Image 1 (spheres, rainbow, N blue to C red):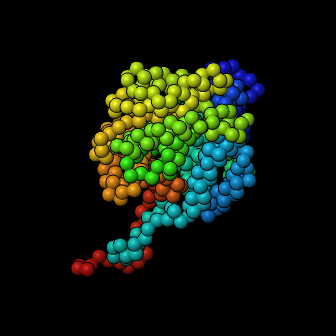
Image 2: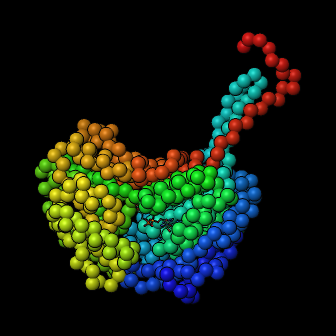
Image 3: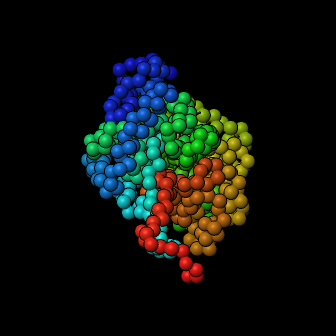
Length: 494
Ligand code: NAD
């Protein structure tokens, strides 16, 4: 914790940017250089109370605004995202460390959810059954649920918040966002753009902090739902606490995603996909491919070519060097945790083909791309989410064994297979126990029209973020049965 300085990040409460009374702050770094660029106030229940009060007040009006008018705000917000696209990408790179190309992807994926939210009038339509009983018509309608909270991780400062609030707000709810204390700056700019788009005061609020604020959001009686994205440990905590306090909760957690390379895979495109999936965003993606299962000759070839490609990968400061293809990890603690796990892999007997610990002296928080071979499924580097640029290669004997090893890791976000055999692809897609499957696709992350459908320890809840499930999560159904015939009397028979 640092002490307060003038670079403190403000909260957004009732449409005003305010500085809280707290004296506790979290340093925000430019991970490429290690310099402190801002400070996040670590708030508590008092600020959550203020945000809920403002949101509750705004909800009485916002829920009555016609869906097409709410969509108008989203259309305007979308235009502003486009107009400020490069600036947003720069902010993402500055506070997160990913390359500008990756940051543009981060903003773009979020923008696509706003696109989807613009269709809210159609997406939230109900059903009608005329004459469902004698002289009675049945109509269902979907109504907003109230004040919704969102808690987000550091790795996608633009996209993950936009998985949540555009849908919640378009559906007529008010939304309180608690971004990661490590990357609060992108969200501040998004808040400014929402205000510029004409969103009424109190419909969108930002409260900063860590566990204290998270627990206050999960237990507050004025909050109807909690959307969480982050590690499985915290996802499980948020799910249990939120449910105990009567809230709807969707909590997406960590992952350990498998990439299977069959001997008949087309190797050039497979290599590109494997490199992108493992080392994109320095491996800090919940859809990162972190376990490479090479089968037979396919395994030998992909191992040799991945090592070669690692040697050619430029790791550097992503803001000042446009040639950088991979940036740092988020902070010192992440770097130390990842390098310790590389050490654990060596200790357990895996073969270290490329060692990323050689960048420790560089200013900033760097771990180079790392490749292990001969990893066994029970080793720590095969069971624990590393969340860094470390690829663990396993050598199953055949597809059956690959699927069996993949299904025992307990997570369930993504799994991909590279093959030219339709039969192998079909078997894999049917037998793998996870929610997002790629066939010759490195990162099978859904676009905004589909739900982000993690399974097992990668998701706690029922309705996922994004897509139609997102609309269902942020609305509840009302059934209206109407009879207008005052003379109706029950008769026998049909
Ligand atoms: P994290 O769990 O440390 O933090 C996520 C959020 O929870 C942050 O806002 C943080 O302030 C808060 N938090 C942290 N510790 C807490 C605690 N003890 N009690 C209450 N709240 C707490 O995650 P992170 O390091 O920011 O992000 C990386 C993780 O997120 C990885 O595990 C990654 O796989 C996961 N992730 C998952 C998805 C998905 O869709 N499944 C997407 C992106 C990231």
